[in-house]
Length: 304
Image (cartoon, rainbow, N blue to C red):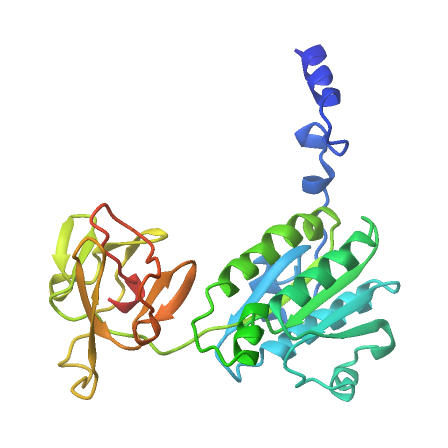
């Protein structure tokens, strides 16, 4: 068994392959403790822990101090490693150098990289990662990915074309697919700031949704039911109805799918279309809604 194991371990093309128990990608578990105990718990589940290598996405509503938390993480990293360098990808320009200095960050060890679109961020980050080796200490911060347009969206604006851009979600996924393995295998830390939104749309009471116990009208869905979503069955935590929230001023849209299915919802209800969440009032004819059942029924479990 040992002979076969050794033979197969050496036979492949990936030179970094090793016996699992000896893999450097699992035996090395460095954490970078910040000055904020609650942040250490969020990153690692340990009060004495902290930021771990790899890609971390920090998402929250506007004005929830996401940038400050990211900067505290950068400070902790630069403090821990005297040879560390920070790469600050900036799309919002709301954190000038004196703000970083006030937190205690050595701004002479941070490279400021202004970016205007997703593709520019991806190409530059990949280029810089190629020059980094495992053992180098680099902290990457993106503030923020939520504020970056795609190149296609920019080109549409320049051409005065108001068509909905369907490439942005794919470019963001491409960014993560390409960079995550390199960042993790080189034991680097990358913190990306994203946005969340409070606004939620509504489905009309008669809309049918798929639950673990069968198809129901949404008015019959109860707390505790499990509703089928693109990410599997999710438990309903709350139910909103007209008796609790006034919706008389809301306009309902009728969306007809190619199989004849009709969905009635408010304009701000979002659908997963071509890999991106799009409001009903921004949908275009011909876009492809993500199927979550054989009957082409779509819903967002959070709405229920």
